[in-house]
Image (cartoon, rainbow, N blue to C red; front, side):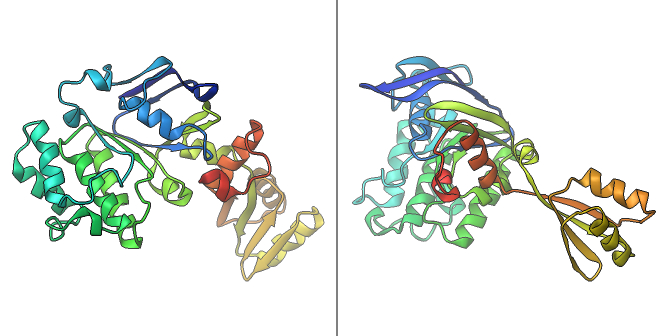
Length: 306
């Protein structure tokens, strides 16, 4: 479990993280969301001891990272895919890490195969593409078979096949009962794999909730309604002043609630075979949330999601 409690990090007069408190639980994928400059990377760096908090604490399984006797066995991290020395071969980079914890050379081969770099392991890191560096960073994170995985923008540089691969990998890690904590600007991808999200802005917590709860609270954009008698339903909707469009037996109603459409169908003795509300996407939900807290008003969804 990751426990961040009243974490504050200042750089001179600038407060990057401001009294941040949240928990990342095992067995789930938790997404870390917020605009550029919100404090996500600083928070992750503070969890693994790369930045010393000005106040507050960040613990993994009740312990500070810097006090762990074998941190690679506790926490696997990918914070910067460019951190590996470009002149080293991938296999040598991982062997050096393994040697610090007494891990066998065989484990290096295992993680290289796991991330799809088995045949590229003897190439120098400097010739790797960004996607290959990301895979190498994930291999390093998994080297000690840790129970906690922290990844900052892990899908950067990955092609579509790589994105599917990492989606399946992270899902399987969470299913094994591990903590998986990641940031990403790809909201559609986060919506597909994360169970919980932590949203911050200007270093402060805005929301700690599930993906479902966040999107359920967001505005309904339209409702799809299907019935064996679409003409009668269309007449009823028009009489009630409900804006709608029709395509064969499917009607899309704008600006109404599912309850209102359901009551209208009941009053006209119409059978509904489908009544589906369409809500905004996760990225739009996050945009609405940050705007409601006075964060980054006027920015686009892409800018807030970045």
